[in-house]
Image (cartoon, rainbow, N blue to C red; front, side, top):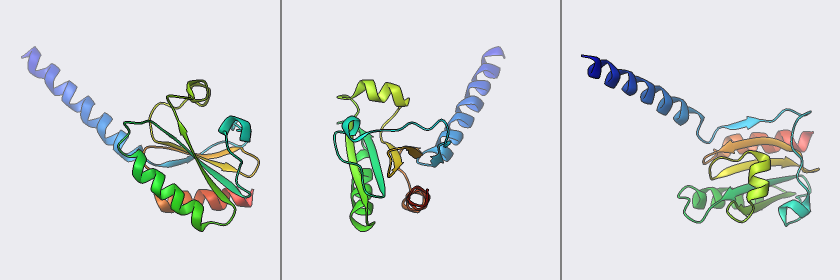
Length: 139
């Protein structure tokens, strides 16, 4: 009987965890203005966009990284003053640790000064990215 209760408890916990993770996957979350990280062109290894920069952290064996790369490149190509920078997380572990990146792809939306104004873990949605870019360019 105890084994059945333990199995039921594990199943419930796993279901709740999976539901919460699925709901948060790819959601763009705003970063607070005061405590937001700031990245420079030197840290990125590329120039910042005139209005906004989309930074993607990926790895070689990341499945969702390829469609995320295509989405960000498409957005950067259609939004004036936007740039897309892809960083290999395996090669830049010090930056990954400093920014608290736990999975790939992770996308950061930077304003023109390099301040992080949005962050998504997992494949982001186009509409949310466009809204974050609008906020970044208004700031």
